[in-house]
Length: 275
Image 1: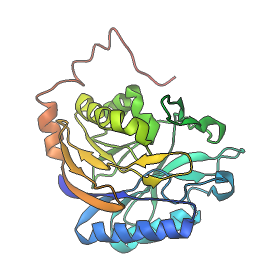
Image 2: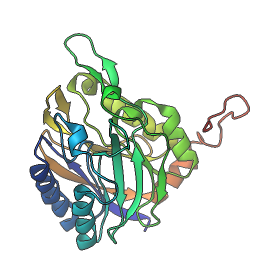
Image 3: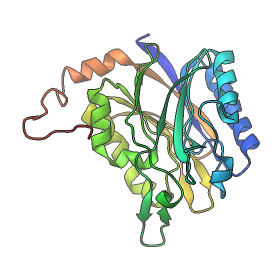
Image 4: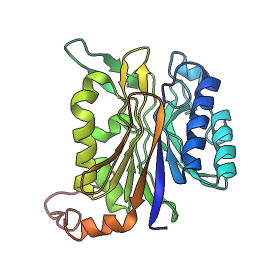
């Protein structure tokens, strides 16, 4: 399937898991009804609030996985589940994304590598996600065969170009960037970062975001899809909603045959490798 429709879910998740899952399901059903075969959700899809250790779930097997697993199977779609808090075996949970196939099976999961530790001046937030979140250790891509080769990331990861270059070199042609981005940074950095990740790797970028007031900050929203040339081909309004965009995997190859950023790397002078 070289062309397919992708759906992107924008949510205003709060501290009621069941309400958040119900809101996500309604929008997923709407995107599926329009023909979306890959449907992507934002970071913290099922919960935004305090006490994250208490709501951390097993992956797979937890209630959020079970909810989305049944939905993926019913609708015959691939679901990228944004992120949830997942049990890590220690006090701090993982910030974890799941990819579920149309049979309802866990195809891949990824724990966020880079905790969001920032101090934004001029009234912006100070956040130390590493105090609450256990960082992951693995770079993850998954070749779905049906809806592209997906590279997995979560929010703050998008500032680390090395991660995305490695995923592209491992075959990714769609980079997924679910987020709960702050308004303070989003207004200046969201679009340039996402465009850069798309252009430098000649990949589609799908970036589902949170919208609305959160306990620590206002979320930026602006969920979008960017093509391998760096064009924004879909962008959400400032409300909970879904958008769709056509993904053409042949276009990835067309761009890569014109702009040789992967082939022209000087690997004799710089090396990206897993340590």
